[in-house]
Amino acid sequence: MDQDAFRQTYRDTSACFCAFETSILTSRCACSLADRFCIAEREGIECRSDQAQQLCFDFLEILREKARFVLKTHQETAPLAHGKTLRLQVGGLRGLHALLRPEKPIPILIRDVHTTLSACRDHFGSLEAIPYQEVIKQIAAFQDKKRSRPRREPSNDD
Image 1: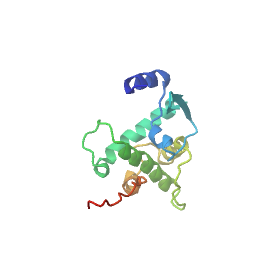
Image 2: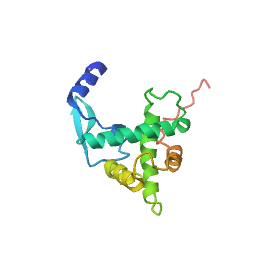
Image 3: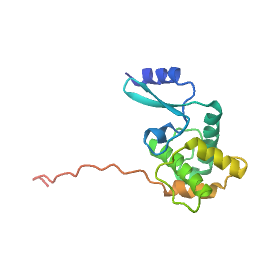
Image 4: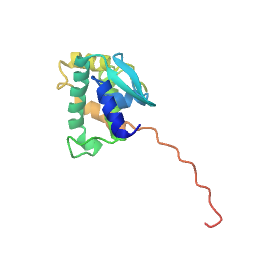
């Protein structure tokens, strides 16, 4: 399946796509409202709630604006590279976890995006009231696993 056909089928299939799809598909987080679906050999995530989807998009929009310096992005609307998307999403969720449960270590897997976001919004009164400077620290600290490259064997020519 070519990329254009995949994108069109994806848009037709998923009316309520997941804002945290990248992080869920890479097993960095999970969500109680996420449903997986397949198109050909590819997998996607959709949200079962329009309200939850809006909450996630609102959070990521605020977070992206606050984290522009850390992510080294200058354009507000340009798509983020995969690694920066992971840093924003996973680091952001880890930061929220640290705010909600400062006495506990931050888990490797955030078990429920919706529960974490809802709890944070309820605790601080709104998404805008979250102390983002603490969240940004987790975005800055997050590092995705580095791919291991096979070592190049020295040749006789070297």
